[in-house]
Image 1 (tube, rainbow, N blue to C red):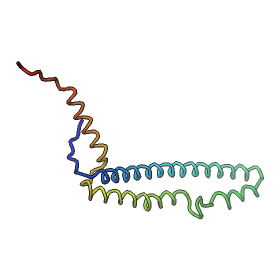
Image 2: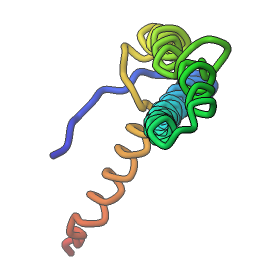
Image 3: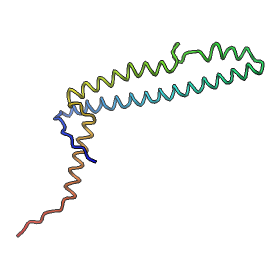
Image 4: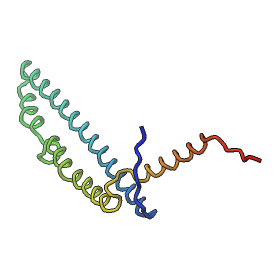
Length: 141
C-alpha cells in the first residue's frame, strides 16, 4: 500500500539536519534498549546473588551470606540508584528531551513529517519504476 505525501520544499542542509536529528533519536532509542537489557541482566544477577545468599546461610556460612545481604544485594548500580531508577531517569530526561527537540524542528521545517529524506527517495524510485513499466509509445508515420 502506497501513501502519497506532499513533501515540503527544503534546502539540502535542512533535509540533512532533519535526517541527522531522526538518526540521533533512533540511536538514542537503541541505547535505551541496551540500557533496558542491562537493567534486566543486573536484575537476574541480583536474583542469583539472593539464591546464593540463601544457600550460604542454609549451609552455615552466615558471614558470607551477611555480606551478600547487607552489602551486595541492596547496593545501587550507579551511585545509590538501582537500574530501574537509571532507566526511568533516562526515559523521562534525556530520551524525552531529544525526542521533543527533534519533533519541534520537524514540526517547524517539515509540517511534522518524519523521514523526509527517505520519503523523497521513495517517491523518486517509484516514479522511475513507473516510467520503466510504462509501454513505449511508438510514433505513427
